[in-house]
Image (cartoon, rainbow, N blue to C red; front, side, top):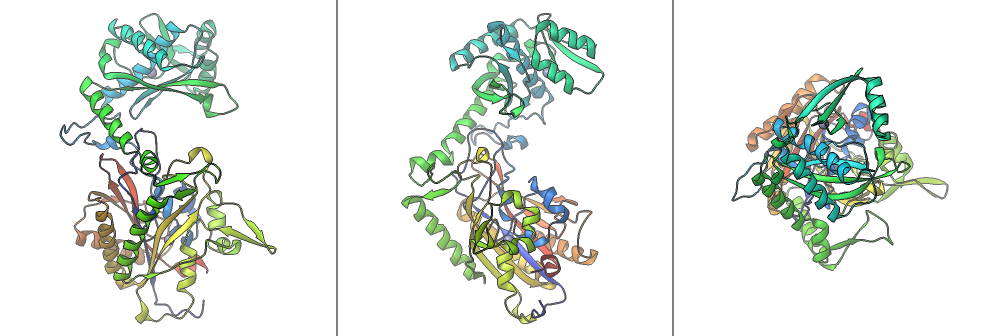
Length: 532
Ligand SMILES: [Zn+2]
Ligand SMILES: [Zn+2]
């Protein structure tokens, strides 16, 4: 390290973007990670990612700097949450469970009404749990496999229960009494649920005096408060009790429920639009890419048409980066395990990494991130003050272990190419560099038609490395750059990584859903933290 002449305070600015095509949209509302095909400059760090806690406690910074594609944790999942416009002509903003207590009550009650209907039609069915979800509700039953025809019957029975306007009556009973009543109706899953309830008093809700469920509420006052024309049963699928494959396979019925018919129609329209844009469907229809069983899940094959699209994107990416003073890099896909030990990845990121391979008695590792490589390139020679800023960028292919069950199209994969850039600069260059990255990010996103962004600035957390003054300087540099850019942003106080503040950018797609895309971080004291 002694051969590196460093400015007294060095900052590495890192940023990262995703190239997204408008086809990367999903029809259903399940939670859904965004994983990039090709990302643009730098390192991403997603504030919503679960890895954050793990990483933010102790990881050497370069591990985090590299953390780019955590961006896959897309935030938008179901961004009707914040008032998505469903259709440009209709301008109807759908309510959410958060924005409408009434809607939440309707959905919760629907789950019970459905369970009651199922047990009326199939007296042997055993009930389990039935929560509300972003677009409605579901309920899991221990019952013979159901068909779409069954769903129609069940919906009809629900309609009858709704039409009878039965009251929902709350009753509080002792644990013993609850247990006695559950035994009397022979509901083994309810016994398990009862055991997991900690409170002394158990709340029961009756629908009329014909059916009851363990539940803490809230519900509508009577079934007549549900508009049967705003409720639809959508699908049925197998689901293990408690999500455990060693436990019984249940039948999960999904339903959607809204306050009125108009909302249901808007939702169904949205769902259809999302289905039309599903990238997996488009990838197949347009013969762009595939994932092949023979090769393994999460490993993408780009077909000729997809490859030419990618070539055009990569070409454009290179051209823009060269124009903006970046040096392009190509670095290896594997490295000695020792490098990943030093960078901190083996300590803090191992569960996301492929197993090591032994080559001539040395352990090697497929790379999950690019950062350590960029730092190796940076520190290969003496740098003087005049050399800064030094900008390096790579379309770096990385490999990450993901559970096979979580793989999904191009959104969650085991191998992907991200753009990753690192800028090494002097303290008084931070603001200009950040401004440059913001401009570059916008320029690239606009090429894909993404013009609406949600910007977050995350500041110093309680546990942090580096003195107050450098945090202050880095944070105000980020703020100044955002102000100059004219982008409004939300401040996430204390939400930064422990090694530096960051800007996160979400993009909005054609259906108004938001997706975590780019992250720009300022990292100080790289040398101390990275030790490489
Ligand atoms: Zn990086
Ligand atoms: Zn309930």
